[in-house]
Image 1: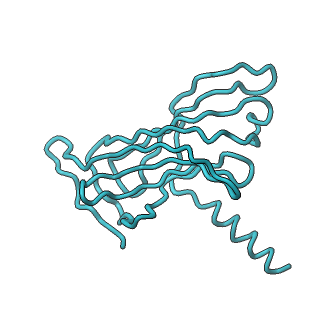
Image 2: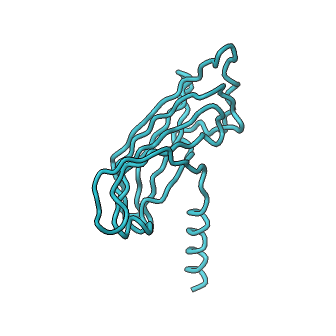
Length: 167
């Protein structure tokens, strides 16, 4: 019993760690609901937590009704991402450079076990940050995904900062 409680506590602790949080930019309704919130598409933005000067914009469907209004509806796996340089690029901390990438954003898409994730990859050959969004579930994830890329470019006369890598 103690082992089960420890495992549950570990899962809850890991799920509480969120690399970045998003700000809602706007939304458009897609279907009217008589009771509860309307179905809609939300547009959210988050800043890369380790790379200053990069913001990612996500669009995703949101269910309406009572379950959507109280946050217990299981959302679809559909999402789109666009990441852009919005200022001089500087590396606040070292980023992971391995083939598994580094999670920079996570948001719950159901009451339990389904998450929308954004993972950052470093393309050293092209000096580009690549962002992948996808949805996963404890048992069965979704192959739906989207990517965006941000090339390290000068901002005005200011060159991009030196890349800091973890290996």
